[in-house]
Image (cartoon, rainbow, N blue to C red; front, top):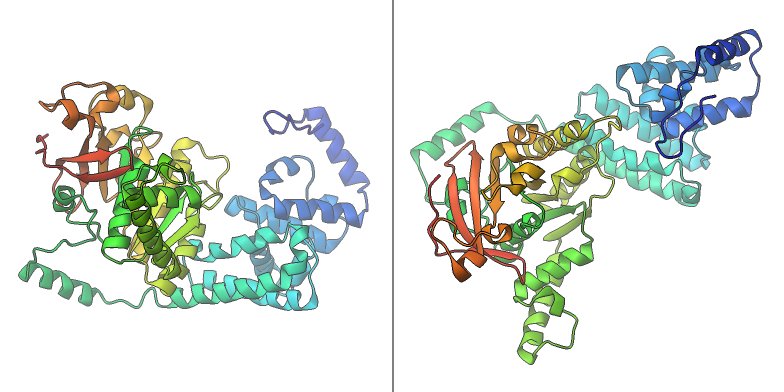
Length: 478
C-alpha cells in the first residue's frame, strides 16, 4: 500500500479497494496519536513535494487535534494555489484564514528553537510576509529559503540563533533595496535616450568583451541585457565567459560576479591564472616552469589576490541555487560592491523549483529567471547554453534554433552569439582558411541582437591557456 519504488522514487498507485479501506478506517475510527500527526505535518513542511502522495491516503478529517487539522487544510490550499508547500506559504495561508494563529506554533512542526530564536524567527517571517503584501518580487523573498532549509537540519540547532540574526539582517537589506526599486522616472529615461541620439559617441554602449570586432557588432554588453553564448560541448563556452571576465576585472577594474554550476573555485582560479600568465594550465604547479615564468606567475598571482581581497572578483557556488536565490544574493552583492556584470556558467545546469518540469520547462524557467535578474538589477548577465546533438554534428556555426531543449532561451536573450571552431569538426578548409590559421580559428556568429547588427566575427583561440583573442583574419558575411 502506497509503496515507493527504490529505482524510480515514484509512489505506487493505490487500488480502489485500498483507498476505500483507508477512507473507512480514518473516517469511522481515527487514530489519536499526537506524535504521528506532528510527524506527518513536519514531513510535509520539510518535503512538500510528497503532498500529492499523502493526499491520496489521508485528509483533514484524519487529524484529531483542531490545530493540526487547520495546518493540513492550509497545506491543501497552498498546494492548490502554487504547488509549493513551505513554512512561509503555510503560515501566510493560516494568517488569511485564522488571524490569531501564531507563526511560532507552526515552527513547532519543524525543529526546536531557543527563546531568542522564537522571537527572531517570528520577526523574520513577518518581514517576509510584509514584502509579499507590498508586491515585491518573489525572487527577492527567496533569500529566506536558505534559512528555512536549515530548520530541517538538527546539526544546525546549536547555531540557530546566529543563523536567525544574520538572515534577518539580510532580509532587511532586501527590503531596503526593494523599497527603492520603483523610485524611477520615465521622463529621466526619455531625457537620457534623447541625449544619446543627439550626442552620438564612438564609445560602446555597454561593457567590452575584449574581442574588438565582436564589440563593434554587439555595441558592448549593456545594462539590463541577457547575453547568451551557444556552442557544442568543449567548444569554449566557459573559456569565452572567462575571457570577458578577465578583460573586465583585470584590464578595466570592474567588479564582476561569476556563478559556476560545474567548476569549483579552485578550478576557475587555475584557468584564470593560466590565461593571465599564458602558461599552460597543466604546467602550473609542476617543476617545468622556467625562472622568468615563475616571476610572471608571482606577479599575476598577486593581481588575482588583490582582485579577490578588494571584492573585484566574486565567485558564487551555484550548486542547488535556482535563479530566485541567485537574484537575492546578487542584489545584496550589487549594493555592497557595485557589481557591473554577472556571469552564469551555465544555463542548462540551473535547477528548477518545479520538480515535475521537463527539460524544456526547466531551461525556459532558468532563462526567464536570468532575464529578470538583468532587467531588475540593470546588469548585463552573461551566460551560455549547449546546442542540440543534431546541430552539433553539422560542420557549420550553430543558429538561434540550435539551442538544446528550449527555444525560449533565444526569446529571452537580448543577444545570442554562437561559437564555432572548425578544427574540432575535422574541417581542413573553412571558407578559404587553412593550416595553422584554421587550427586556432574561432568564429563568433551574432545570431540575435536587439540593438545592433548580426553577422560573423573571426577570432583566435589559444587552447593551451583557454583564452580567446583578437584575430587578423577577416570574417566572411552570412
